[in-house]
Image (tube, rainbow, N blue to C red; front, side, top):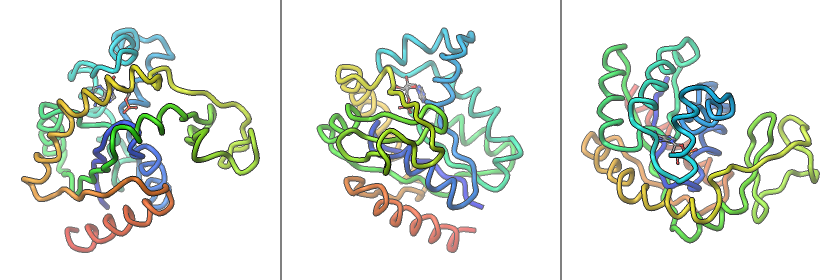
Length: 222
Ligand code: AMP
């Protein structure tokens, strides 16, 4: 089964697509952002270290995230395949990922780049909230639960929003994205793994395209 990387600015829809894809293909979605938020909530050593970086929209030091991914990709539930959402974020992380995967006989077969303009990202993110129980993402402007106040996926009535989804922090996250993460498109293009998608459309339509790209890669590269 396929191992893939999702690239794109914050708010480009990577997280939603990762969850949909994981469900459809029965593979594992790994979000370094989610893993770090759990550490922050648990007030662990990693969490304490990561908190200030995250709150200001900066990248957490590479060693921390690389360790998280190293531990994760070798686990049983990644055997069928995995989706990396939010990792790698810079060239060093991308190189470390290759090394780590090499050492366990795995590789990335596809990197999907979700393209959206900054101003749209800001609007999307400022309306973003999620179910506290299962993490399903909603948006005050675009995507409400079918029954107001009740999560479509797990019926929970508790919702929350992210600390770093404030406009000022989002602008910083976008700056970091353009300065360091966007360059990864070239890294994966060199290896002939990149597929860029216009991510402006709604999540269901976008998912049809994502699924088609993944299935095509499965057919041609596996
Ligand atoms: P995300 O949920 O992917 O938007 O990530 C939220 C925040 O977590 C980012 O703004 C960073 O501070 C941190 N983070 C997540 N993934 C990484 C990564 N691969 N490298 C460094 N920091 C990360």
